[in-house]
Amino acid sequence: MTIKAASVPIGVFDSGVGGLTVVSAIRRALPGQPIIYFGDTARVPYGNKSARIVERYSLEIASFLVSRGVRFLVVACNTSSSLALAALEAKYSALPILGMIGPGARAAVEATANNRIGIIGTRATVQSGAYDKEVRRLSPRAEVFSRACPLFVPLVEEGWANERVAEEVAARYLEPLLEEGIDTLILGCTHYPVLAPVISKVAGPSVTLISSSEAAAGELASRLGGGGAQTGERGELRCFVTDAGTYFKEVAERILGEPLASLEAIDEERLVAQ
Ligand code: DGL
Image (cartoon, helix red, strand yellow):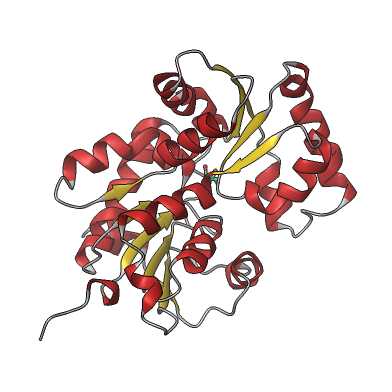
């Protein structure tokens, strides 16, 4: 019996719950595609860790997902995409791998009219310069302005993405970028698409927001040829975490917009032993 490619799961991983914005975008683009999601909730956040640690954690998670037979790996975490993509590609050269940086940068370069592009993300993502390098590689004339926005992640997880406090924080973070006259802003972190309404209100209509989650889901759909979308059935979503903690499910379902049918905790030591 031949197995239809669309029935083989893809692996998606993140430092925690935020990567479900990418899963949500993938499920809109490819509703029939089965997905195995891995959130490293015991070791989150990655956004303030060193490249060496983020690379090690990312390789451990990839090894777990590969052992589950995934046919494609999506690095939903922007910090891992910035710091660990090269190591993942070197180790799993036979596996197609998609990070967030390429799709986000490509969408921004296509969207900008004045070549002034803003990038927001975790401290580690911004310090790595990964988005800046990719944007400049694609468009040498582009000018890039970046800023880390560490308070955005807890605001989203607290469910305050549409509160006044989120607007005040966004105004403070975005001010220097807006002063530079950017016309395009890359939301270079898993959680930030949830804040898009508030960011858009602060940035105003002249700034186009680029969700790296949406951009990556679009690229994934074209690379998989839309196969998963044609099965008619909703693909299974299995979630693994390193610690289910007290509030993963609640935040996950809010971000995903659907109930989590399958959630399993994997002991961190088992992950390391893969
Ligand atoms: N998932 C991370 C990212 O997209 C944000 C949360 C963290 O710092 O781990 O960069």
